[in-house]
Length: 400
Image (cartoon, rainbow, N blue to C red; front, side, top):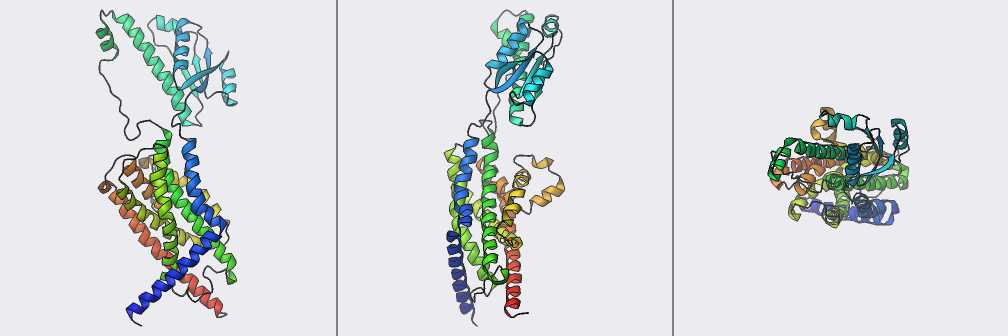
């Protein structure tokens, strides 16, 4: 058989499998939900939830045992800040902790009875801050507000004691060095701008794997003897099967990938520093690696429900392993090795560095290379999986 004839046979079989897979995707409500509805709606829900970026008016309870002019000034300045709202006053610390345990307040400001006395004696005084550490954003708001107010009151006391004659001398005594704070990569200091770009890449991978696994589970339930490969003469070779299925999924997720990486960030004003062409150069290997990874994993799916248990369980760990929500340098070496198995690790890192941090394509080239390597390895693994399934189907058809 000539090479041309073999190539023609490959193209015909791959096109047939692509058509069959497209028909199954658009006739299976479950697969359609994961391939179309979830990528369209899920990122919008996430983005709307975190659209405020920062937490404001966090409720706190105050225990003021000083009852002095200085303690009232401290409380008033904290309440005037945009991050904290003094919602309750308590007689002692136990009552304040009770309010926190009932989630009526997120933290406690405890002012001791000698607060004003020690300050008037030019001694260092203490304000205790108790925070609910279950949510880091509220802890940050409560703690930073207390620090800012204490620094402001301390600066005012230094000015009164300095004996300066001019306003310029007051400014220099309070702030000898002028410091300009410039937030890098996240000008709003927002949680959404920090985390959601990585989440978008993770959603892209997880919905792909869920849809492919659900489709594989459906095929096993419908086919004779519960096999992944149907009893069809067109399913006679490994490469047309993998190529036809991959082409079907790639056509759908080329649109979904562009929507998630370019449209959603613009809708919610997340940082968008990358050029569209550079983003495409990242998305192509990332989608291919995710597709072949999903096809490989689908061999483990014997029932439609299995893929939900498998993929949803690892979603949160995969977000941490990207190194975006938790510092990459703090991830143990063994877990970093585990993270290399998943395309979301390198896809999220490349996307965040390129789109949120303003890196050039050359600076994310190592991640892109890893994605191409993953795509090649998982393509080979997918071919091995379907090769095994073809041999098993042939033995069963012969009654062995």
